[in-house]
Image (cartoon, rainbow, N blue to C red; front, side, top):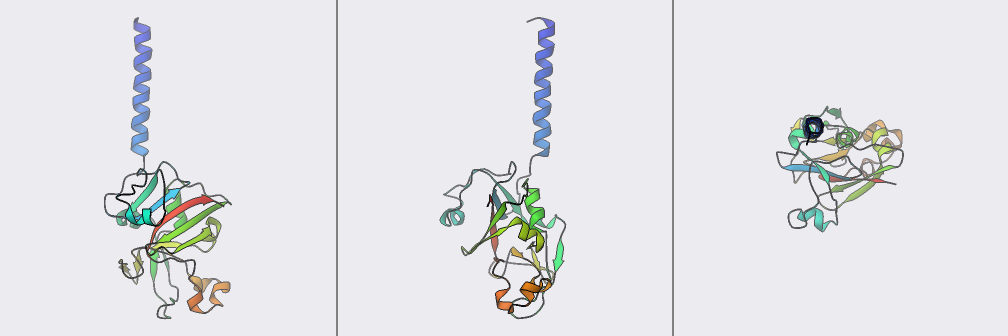
Length: 197
């Protein structure tokens, strides 16, 4: 190999190594704490691999399937800008303070390109699922609530995550009895599948 060929090959190799290093630095970070939310479907590169039927038992039993996903732990979700809402809840007919990131911000953090045909299947730990458009999630300003009345929500209550919006702020919902305002809001949300409708 002559000197020129060697230098070109070395430069190509260095360029490739530099490109890989840049990609690795910008790659989504894997969750370090217990995963609370998994987003799959039409996402960016993701930060975890495919569903493991042996270890992802709940998702497997609920017929969830994916080749890649983005997993969020509590720290990742609470590091995002938070929105505070104060809806009247159906469980006690009282207003409560809920806080968490906008659902659309969480989707963008996964590399989702939200378009007019983007649809979301929100799943709760009990198997309850809701299909809504990303446009509705944006228009109603859905959040993934991490806190209820300034305290982290736990499993066994409405959490640890609740996909919810301030129904009191929308005349079409505020006109309904409070028990009918939250059918699009699965508490204990743990999975979002992004699809095209």
